[in-house]
Image 1: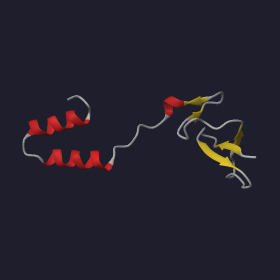
Image 2: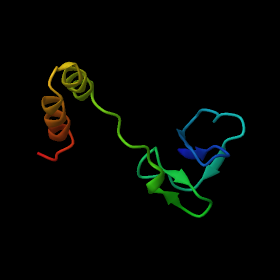
Image 3: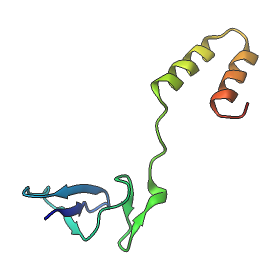
Image 4: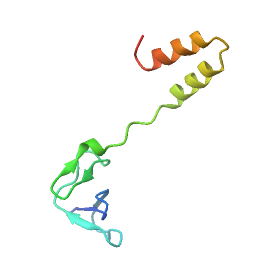
Length: 85
């Protein structure tokens, strides 16, 4: 049977079956829907999830945009990336 654990900060550590959880792990009844959720003491806080990181493609496009000589071109590309165009 799988048992679920979190640490003292409310971070989900995972489910363990036939393995010892980390020292200091606190057993909980149910895992969160998303491993990034934070335990508040009475439930899982979904708003604490970190924002998704930018993809490598987005970072590369931004780097190219920032290297363009025309400020207007840079602004247009950044607006497209942010979904404003």
